[in-house]
Image 1 (cartoon, rainbow, N blue to C red):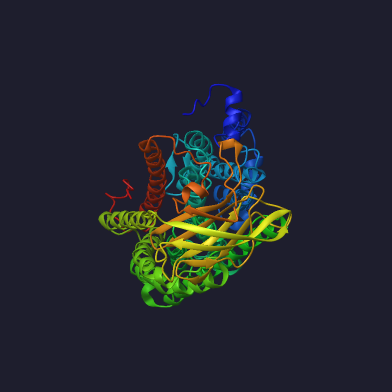
Image 2 (spheres, helix red, strand yellow; image 1 turned 90 degrees about the horizontal axis):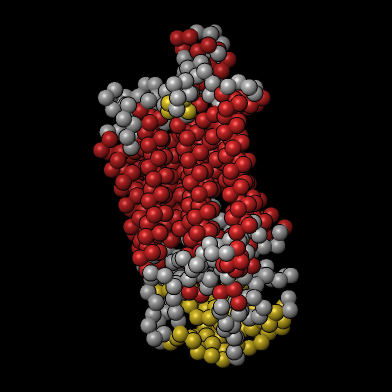
Length: 639
């Protein structure tokens, strides 16, 4: 454990050397978490013993404006503001790490405050849904806490997802103390942070559905909301059916929720959005397919026609505003984003057919369309906007993963929509097979993407010529000879130079140059690259499963005891495991089994969150009015 925890000075030194945070920051965060927990406990006691009434009045006001119960309306209003806050902080944080490198601790990075506030209030939003119901059972799927206290299932899931994300912060600090700072989005504890926040959107959709089910019980006594001016109680509409202005507001609210889900499921792609992907390019179409298939197929099935197009438009506006603030306004590295427009179009076209009446079949067919036609249409956007377009040579492997992923994730989206349709769920064996199949296919696709080859006895000979200085930094042009000369095909994913973590006045900390091929194994740069200051500049190669790099210039780093790798006029260096270059602070001085065991613990926690969401959807479906499942099956609510 690198003698962690011995003295305060040792802990501070660990933070500066790429380990965990300083002790004062750990104590500060722990104290804040304790205060918030005590406040929530106080609020719950005061509200449920009726010693305060302002919380109920606030919830009733929100419910009146959204035509939902207060225990749905107020948490969702809070959730929207907090998730946007956390998302802004997340994009800013990634940008800061790309442009400036590691920070001295969680409270030394301004973006972390937005993330922490957002995640804390996400957790609070779920807790509010649990605390608010008084003298009522919030829908038939509510979970009994005490003899007179029931909590909506969606509220429990939102709180659980928020807690899961928050737990990622202290675990991340422990992780860094053991394994060093893995400056990558895909660090296991980082995935907990972003996964909990992203998947909390599923809990929000479930909570909103519980609210509509609860409102349906009162719709007969409210002729205006029922759309029945005669007040005939025998013409009660289906669950969630509204008319007029309220129906339009509800449609936009629900479609916006799916736009949020598109954003939430897209966070796993952020490294590709910045052009600092640390894993093979084949992951990008896979991740886009998984996110698009679930969010857009479910949107059309649950909200209706036009919902998928509205969702991608909503996501694009939020992403564009965030990128504008982080990039041009704050001066950090700029990101682009997946558009999903082609995928939305194919789902919407299929939504015009009778397939929508058979949700599972629609999910499978639409998923297939997303994983093929949708991916191709998305590649046109990638070609125009991204630093690394998808080469022709990658398509066979990409389709081998996007097609099964699209079909199984589409089936899962159809199952999710059917669970909340009021028509009940298919037999347990069918739904469990779908969910298990989705997990297995996605896991196999990820495992395939993680397979890389580092070429043996391969090297790069580099010649540098000075260019005019920029921002006070030395700038160079490069010619590169890779040997053996036939190592790289004519159509690789990339042969590029990357310089990052050296922000100046005009250079924002990230420079990427796709090299021009001039002959067998010969390449030259198309723009000057910085090789001075705190920059880390190196050659990157990815061709199929081959993925490696060679340093051009690496600044000295006293914090981790790394010496400078100088940018000589001419040199020859071996191609090596690229992760050691991109994640220079990461420590490999530990037993291999320890990293594997720690990763498996995080994986188990992630699977537990997925199981909880599936359990929640099944519980809500099996206990909903009109459910066609057998009465013997309803109480079990198994996935």
